[in-house]
Length: 189
Image 1 (spheres, rainbow, N blue to C red):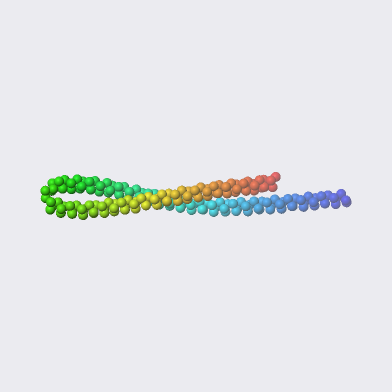
Image 2: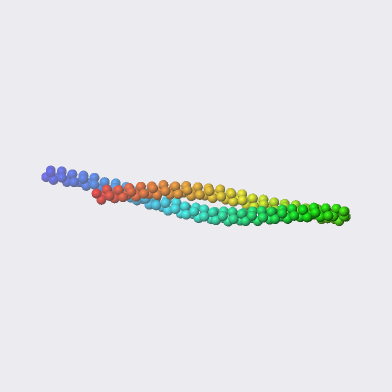
């Protein structure tokens, strides 16, 4: 009878130990599954942020390309117009000089022509000033493009940082999944 009682006590103790081990294992498994779920949620949020930043980056790149193309067109137009106006002014100046030599003997007409040429010169100076203003506007647009390119670079740095965070989060998730798999295998054994 005492042997039977000892056997029951031994099996009872063993049963309590086995039950405690199963509870601990179940608690760890639940904790790892919860952590894995949290990491997956965090990964999904990070991916969503990455997608949003990629969209913003694409929009900024498109805007910058449009601004750059517009600036290049304006600069090319202004340079071409400036060259044409300068050549035209040089041609006019040459013609006016020849006219002044031809009409040197006719002082009255020369005076009239001098007044007329002075008015044209003022108009030409105004035109040159206007062209300089257009050139300054184009240079300002170029500066804005440079600012936009710097902003794009900053945005790309933020995207790279998010990629790094995403990689670290995915690595943590992989470790957690590996722990769950090891716990599952240990339970199966």
